[in-house]
Image (cartoon, rainbow, N blue to C red; front, side, top):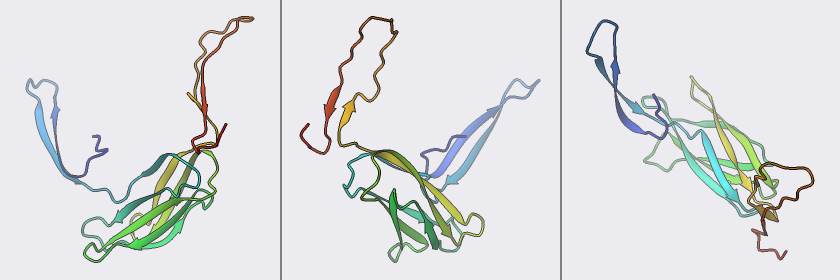
Length: 169
């Protein structure tokens, strides 16, 4: 059962065929999909120093005590993380802000945020953070397929060179 991207009440019908029985037995599965926190925060392509940030909410499961974040672990070369209880009226939730570090290295990045909580069953929550910090000079396309190469035969391909930061080339 693929529940990716689903939230709230779900219903799914499953037909099972038994050997020797012509008509399948049909079951209806019903449930409620609840996302406690996102699994991935994707920044896509960003400019270094652009103050890019994303926010998400950590929620407690129904019938559980309000969630509390006791500690946050992350790579401060990649991100800065802050966590604040949600405003009143939405008790049991914590708003988390993830900002890219001002001097994050250029290129692809992938890191992990680990939240220590008061959840007795799964105290540590892990969220992957990824994206691409654009280089001072970008070449596009990033991948050039040259096909079959033959010794001594020249081969060329056009690429575009630009500065996403507006620097003259």
